[in-house]
Every structure is written in structure tokens, then in C-alpha cells.
Length: 384
Image (cartoon, rainbow, N blue to C red; front, side, top):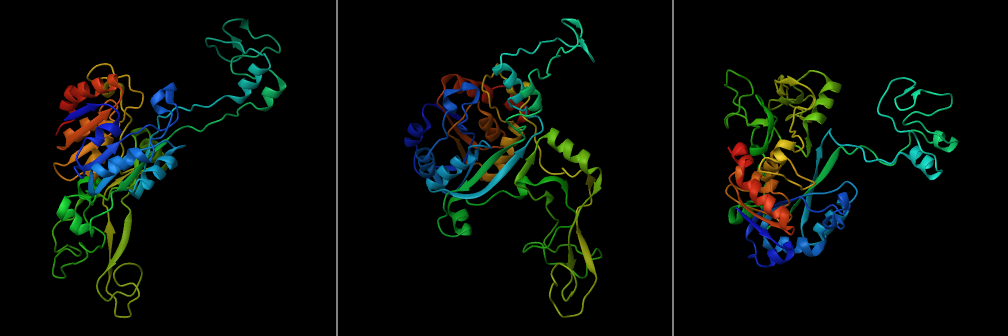
């Protein structure tokens, strides 16, 4: 584990070319979040061009972005020479609306001061006692214009963050690049979600069946992989609960119908064939549950944030989410670089998954926090 303090462009300039297996980071969103000076702009092309230089051919790049500014980040990454591969979405249910109350703003501009109360029910004002005729209680509009705009605001509830997935151009084919550099592919099986799959859809790897098997549809190539194919959407616990409440308990979904060679009907291997058909076999999942039966991870809890002492960083990412992302894009034993290390969540995740890690942080206080967190009790809790 190596956490270096300084401007990431200067620190990366001292690193060797093609020395990093993956880049996983949470750069500034350019929103001036909480008035922080470091968040007044989205890192531009020079940052990501230097990151491209130190990355191996085919190395993957993961970067969180803001909902209002991720387009700028995506363009800068692409203009630096990276290939944009996907945009993941981390959905969470615990976001708090940061909206201006338009009605209240109109009253304030008109010099109307709404009464402040400590509580109470119905028409009782806990400061003034019983409510007097024409008297407003807390939250009620006073002026006519304010009444007309009651219930209007300026922002929606934040419920997701985009995660940009990019890749350095390959040196030849994917196969050649993987063999030469160990990079260029995603760890699909290592990041499968949830349940065990008993029967798997047809693919180049799982489409051959043994006609003599006592159980129809048994693969010749061994047991199917566990869990669902990783998606480009992730849920936190609150968002997953809301989805499950809306959907209710549901059985596993049938993905497709597999037909033996010569099938003429429906979907699957025999689509469009004119030869005789044999019975179709349903494939899918045998589990039951809500509609959110795929990857989810909660926001970083207070106990996780402060596990190794007080952590003042305002945008701490959950270690579970960072572990999944690190595992998705990094070859076994690979080196992960985080040019915007913050308080070290990526470092904790990388080490917990058995990877090597270099973090760069320009703020001295955050760098100290990152070193403390990576060496602290949280890592011991999340390590395998």
C-alpha cells in the first residue's frame, strides 16, 4: 500500500509507463460541494492523459461523476485517449433533497417572516399558543404570490451517481492483450450477483447439452457459474427495499427457451429452422424474492466512515461498492491506482481483495486519514 501526497499530475509523471493494471477513482464533480475549493472544477484532459500513460494497454478505468457534470468528465476522459465502455449507475435511497422552497423565498424577498415553531399539532402554535385568525403556522405561505407558488422547488431528490467505465486501447485483439498484459477483460464470474444459477442460458460456452443425461439441459462443460451476470446498475439497501416493496415476492424469471437442434418454434437455438421440433426447455433462476435481486450496497455508514478515527471527507464511498468495482476491472494481484484517493476507501477495498494499491491525494489531512483508515480496524473487518 502506497499513499502519496501531492498533485496527481505531478506524482503520475514520476511513475513508469504502462505500470498500472487498473484505475479506480472518485474525482471532483465540479459542484463546489460544501464550498470545497477542490471541487470547483472537473479534472480535464491533462489528468486523464497522464493516467493513460501509466496504464497498461487494455487497462480499465472507473470514475464516479456528478449527475450534472459527468458529461464533462466523460468527454475529458475520451479526449485523453480512453475508450468509453459503459456508464454504470449506483442507485441509493438515502439521498436528501437540496431544493430551494420557492414559496418561502418569495416571502423572504417580500420581507415576510414566517413564524418559527418547535412543534405542535393542528392549529396550535407552540410559541404563541392557540392560533389566531389569519395567523400562519410554520411552513405556511404568507403573501399571495407565495401562496400561488407553494409546493414548488428547484431540485429533485438525489438517488444515483453515474460511474464511468473506460478502457485504454488494446494492443491487438482482446485475447492477445490479455495474454500479454493481463488486462482488457472484465471479471464477470468473480462479480456475479446473488443466487446460484441452476440452469444457464445458451451461449458459446454453455450451449452444448448432453442428450444422454438423465437431467435434460445438463451442460457437458461442467456446472453453471453462481449468481447473475453483473449489471451496470447497483442498488443500495434503501433503494432495493423500495423496489422489492413495489414488486412483491416473485419467482425466478425465465430468461429464454432452449430448444434442441431442429426446433422450429419460439426463441432459442432453433429459431427460423424448418426441421422437426423437439420440446423446449425453460432456463432461468429457481430463486424467489423481490425485483431487486441483484447487486446492492449501502452508502458508507457513520461507523464505517469513522472506524479508524474522525473522517472529515465529505464524499466517502462504501467499501463494499469499491471492492466490487476493484474486483470487476483488476486482474489477480494487479496494481490499482487512485489519483484522487480522498479518505482511502478504494485503498481499503483494493487490499481487501488482494490487489496492490497506489493512492494520490493532494490534501494533507485527507492523505493522513487515508493512511489511518487503510491501516486501521476497518481493513481488518473487511479483509477476506
